[in-house]
Length: 459
Ligand SMILES: NC(=O)c1ccc[n+]([C@@H]2O[C@H](COP(=O)([O-])OP(=O)(O)OC[C@H]3O[C@@H](n4cnc5c(N)ncnc54)[C@H](O)[C@@H]3O)[C@@H](O)[C@H]2O)c1
Image 1 (tube, protein in one colour):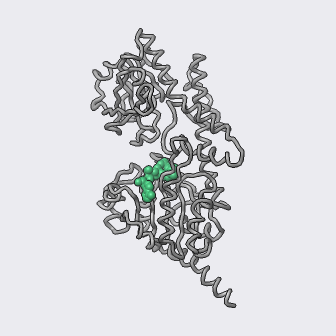
Image 2 (cartoon, protein in one colour; image 1 turned 90 degrees about the horizontal axis):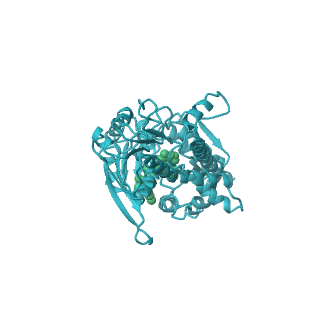
Image 3 (cartoon, protein in one colour; image 1 turned 90 degrees about the vertical axis):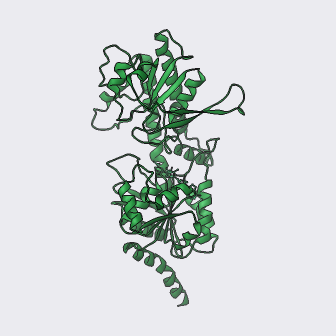
């Protein structure tokens, strides 16, 4: 009898939390208010949940509290409104985690310099959550990571508090799948995976996410959800590598890879469009597959597709520089001393995100070859390029470049070569082609331009 009462009381935590969620009264803590966390915090606040955003970055915290936005996918007026309405506030004081019913972890998961998972951010946050964990809390890890992280890294620290998972607190992995800049698919209409440590964990999390997201898909464990997310990004990395390899082969065979792909993608089934480029960038594609590759080694398993895709994608900046050298050579010039104007340095068009951008590598290589490099990017006023001095690693230096302010005909015409690395839609590529002596287009954005003088080379 006593046991029954005990069980009933414990089960009530799930029911109580679901009731709070249904009433949008559950206090939601979003830890890490970056590209993923801030849009999520605003989404939840918009539908009435009281939201507290936590971050170590004091500037970000202060900005949000002033109603100021710094993430492009968030609408300024929506952020301002939820802050003014008192639905969203931010803090650097993690003791406030104790006030939260739902804690969502959105901190970075980068690689170390040896290309191994760097879980320090998840570990730090887990330590803070454990200090303030109380019965009735749902903890959801949204950061991308290798299968096993939720149960092997987070669960032991939370369970060490003496609280029982699935009864006292609820733990899930629910990967964020946002595609920054995508106008069609937002957090709200992108299917949400939820994998709980127990079925009760999954149920509570599905109830929570179901309030704001159109479709929630339950996975039988956190590991399935973790693996699904890294597989999605691996799928992209591998397919991008495949078209990049085709670009290298087409270049050698004198076939336009762009025309070939356009032709191939007219098939209405069995094929999906991917396009080549100067490399891969962003927080996900160049990073996440290596989380899986690292974990696989624990099982004596080598993820060969991942390694091969990484090798091909990492080689693309070198190919761009080789091709630049060939184009300059056709004009009787060499890389050394040539003026190269790079157009676009962010990893993706029409976004201000420089993380892992292949432009960083291309510019580094061009500068090492002795080019005089300038760049134009309306989203990046200045950038830091790592340069290794000859011979010694210790002498690793960096150079700061400022974006060309005005992409004038004189500026374009003054360069020996213009290299398009990111195809921002605000740039008039027709005018660029008209004014440039030579253009290397790695993004297929000059096709509409009138290239009567034959000064455009496609990747
Ligand atoms: N950006 C994307 O397109 C995208 C898409 C899907 C998934 N993800 C994944 O989401 C996670 C977050 O990525 P992001 O792009 O939002 O990163 P981000 O760098 O934009 O934001 C992370 C935030 O966490 C903060 N932070 C770091 N350590 C902290 C700590 N100990 N406590 C509190 N805050 C801390 C940082 O200051 C930063 O503001 C990563 O795992 C990433 O792989 C990103």
